[in-house]
Structures are given as structure tokens and as C-alpha cells.
Image (tube, rainbow, N blue to C red; front, side):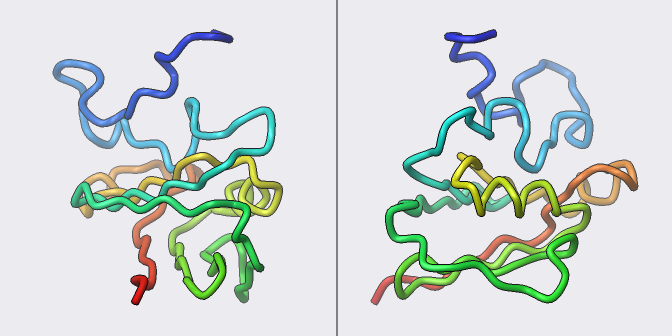
Amino acid sequence: MRGSVQPFERMAGSRPGADEADEYRAFAFGRVGIRPQMTLVVRRSTGEFEGFAYAEFSGISGINEDNGFVVRFGPRLVAIEGKNLKRLFGYVCNFRAAEILEASGSAALKIPEDEPVVWNASWTKLV
């Protein structure tokens, strides 16, 4: 679907009558670019979101990237927690993830065991 904007539409609510767990994807379906991205948007299940410029990327750290990691954008920190996040970690390291979505509590419980899921996405505020 090259050149189509449809893959970039938000997955939640995109299909009438669709189950929330069927629609949730941590970072797939248009949220990974074939080229480096300019911005990483982190979206909470509450609808709150924040964009971070990859130009300000200053590092990434964690203990086990499969369970979560912390990304530094200048003085700000973005914490991502979940499971099966190794691919997402690689995409962020290579500036290819365009958007990370936090799953709602009910959706996170319904995600298949082998699928990536972000159950907590948080960031420090600018002061």
C-alpha cells in the first residue's frame, strides 16, 4: 500500500464492531517507516500524546529490552514498559518507529502471548 494514508490511520476504532484487542498494535501498520523518521509520537491509552524529535535523541537504556526501556530526548525521558518489545527497541534505536501506542488495561489482557504489547508509556514533562 505504498503511497496510501490508510495504514497511518489510528487502529483503535478503525473497523466498526471490531474488538479493541483485535485492533491494538504496539507499533505496526504504518507506525514503522522504511526511512528514518523525524518524530516519535508516544500515545497513552487515555488519548494523551507527546511527540519527540529524533534530532534530540541522546540515548536509550534498560535491563531487558524485551520488557521495556527508557529513551532520552535531550533532558526528557520516555519510559516504555511491556512485553515482546525487542523489535520495537530496534526500531527506536534506528529512528524508524513513528508511533508507540499504550494498550488499555482490557486490551492488554487480550493480546496473544507472543505479540508485542506496551502496557505503560510515560514521559517527563518539560519545565
